[in-house]
Length: 211
Image (cartoon, rainbow, N blue to C red):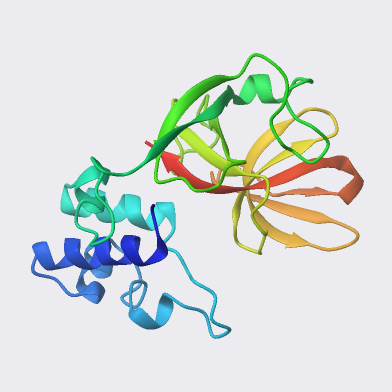
């Protein structure tokens, strides 16, 4: 199981292997020096905070390590021993057409492929395959985005949204009120999008990206 504790232990172990503190690792990756501090791992109300996919990607690039070597450093996780299961897989273009999701954004119907993903406890999660360049630099063509329709949404979450017109997009949830939903783009070349709630079919939180 890919737990909150395991991922932070993996980052601590990675820092130690390179002779760095958690702050030193963050600075090496071009992040704020406090990004990986213990105080940032749990919010004031006790909720667990996870490092972002973007932060981890920067750490791996800065240390010339890969995802497997990162996770193998966690005390509660190893890639070889981690349980994996097949999750439904669909391309972004297919996701915009009808018949693949119910009204709540859960995968249904035929035509889904499958991909195996380790350490995934959410039984409702599914994967979308990125196509094109609109989600760079965070997600590249061919990446798999692991999506959960049951996770609670909060401001700043990376999400996949589907409009009533069938447009499917990966965005950042900037603001959500009774009158409008504001989604910011991952790619700075694409402007924010503002919708009325009734224009959105469903929104699901991005849990992870398999790169």
